[in-house]
Amino acid sequence: MRTKVKADRSGYLFDNKALTMLIIPLIIEQLLAVLVGMADSIMIASVGEAAVSGVSLVDNIMVLLINIFAALATGGAVVAGQYLGQKKTGEARKAATQLVWFTTIIAVVIMVFIYLCKNMILHSVFGHIEADVMGHANIYILIVSASIPFLAMYNAGAAVFRAMGNSKVPMQVSVIMNIINVSGNAILIYGFHRGTEGVAIPTLLSRVVAAILIVVLLWNPNQTLYLERTWKYRVNWRMVKSILSIGVPNGLESSMFQLGKIIVLSLVSSFGTYAIAANAVSNAVALFQILPGLAMSLAVTTVIARCVGAGDYEQVRYYTRKLMMITYVGMWFTNAVILLAMPLILRAYHLSDITAYYTKKILIFHGVSSMLIWPIAFTLPGVFRAAGDAKVCMVISIISMWIFRIIFSYVLGKYMGMEVFGVWVAMVIDWVVRCICFIIRYFGGKWKKAAIV
Picture 1 (cartoon, rainbow, N blue to C red):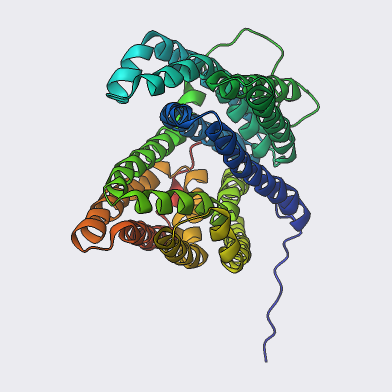
Picture 2: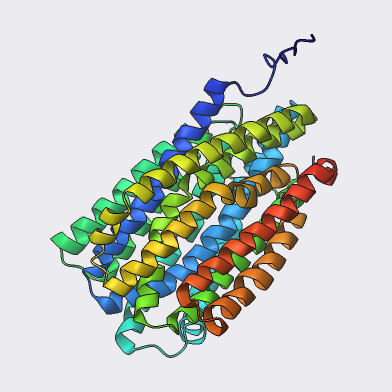
């Protein structure tokens, strides 16, 4: 009888300790972002409905920008990670420098454009809205737009640290940023009774502090990747092109996803107040249901990019299996806790009977689907992006979203009478299609030829 020989993985790039040190801070950072978002919404609500409406309208633009900067940061992390895998540390440093300064310059251009076109944005994009809502939106966009370059700088800097396998520093900076934001909101809103500016000023201040901290920490020459202490920046178009080859498809994918959410939201609104409330509460809780997956998607970029750079696809396969397994364990644990706590969650929101019924139905369906499908639909594509195969991910995701999520939302929700629950069923159908496409892509192996450095 032949015995199976255990593979020697002592020389692999990430041992269990390194993976743990990478993953846990990412989970904490994602948890903080969700919790702070909820705290912000509660405090903004105390200012009044007009303020809530004005801030939420502008935040739709800010979410779009955050997605763009996050996409560019992913592109930079992939390029730097692949260079580190090739042991070309000098090139990885150049990629890190190009990422931070090029992204910041782009953000400054966007900020100037928003200030120059502020009135057009407020009136053309948001259409006809009440005067008091417009007033709050105007104040919020005036203050928060100044934070755009700092937001971009933080995202880029955090991506550089993650490319080194160090997610602890971005987590620590994120903690400081969120403390400033939440405490600033509390002081200005409850202490000084300020309105929209009480929400906007802490957001600006927290992002400025986060950007300064991340850049100062990146100036440390004792790190694997660091920024040179100079203001003389020259665009390295070869590096920038490599970064954009990942960042642009990733950004388009994220932007289309955000647009799809807005289109679907307009459909949900047509079903009535109960549907809007059930959808809003479900979206808030659903973020917790997929939280481990969001963190693991960032971890996949770091680990797989390094393996691809080293040209070791045996390690790519090994870490893909391992990280997917960890994602599934995290998703099962998180969703089990949320499903057990469902009665308490629904009671906390003080929902009407019909709203509570549909919210519970949606969250159980979404939770079970997240446990079974989400990791393949959203974590596995991180492997392709880290390997340089971002364009195919973009095409699959956009086609699947428009055909199955948006069209089926109308078919199931409006024409088959499933209403808001039908919208969530359509979303999971989109996940299933993505799963099938990404599994075929993974085992087909063409993505292994997409390395960008």
